[in-house]
Length: 217
Image (cartoon, rainbow, N blue to C red):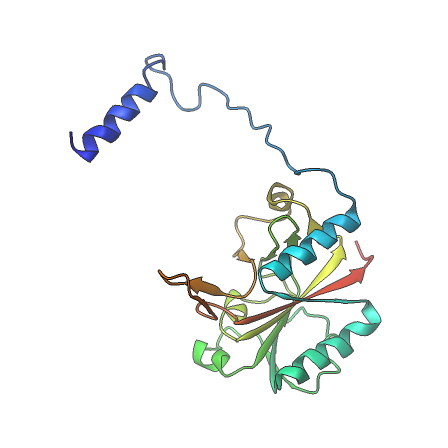
């Protein structure tokens, strides 16, 4: 029996008890999936996010509104960054203390031009604690997808607690499938057949996440 015959035989066995003429939409499927795994407080959910971000080799920082601009300036100085891509809707006070050259997110920017920029600073759409994932949706404070894929250093500000959810099912209603979504779990990385990890292959080599204590809804 060929591989094709074996697959078709399995399909026929799986459909043996399906009444003739029944279509895929004729039998409702229960979609009572768990939205959250376990019970956590808001503070515990934020801590889980920080833990999983670090597990994926992101560098996690914490700040309040007053300390954010100095922190961003320090992170850029520590990397020796001289230029920073900023989305058009980013709070102008965030990079104010950085002293670096600010590069606007322009439609005309080429990958080569972006490759010459040291860092990028963005907000996010939502952060998922259980998976340590940050989701960008090209919102005003996040900019075009390419600005977070080409520069080697990405600083992402997550407003906590209201931008943090526990699980992927909780995140999905906050996102529009019609927007360009970028799901980030740690720095860009891949492994070869010998499991040697290489970072910066298809995105930033360094991801720094600032958990910004913010009560703004």
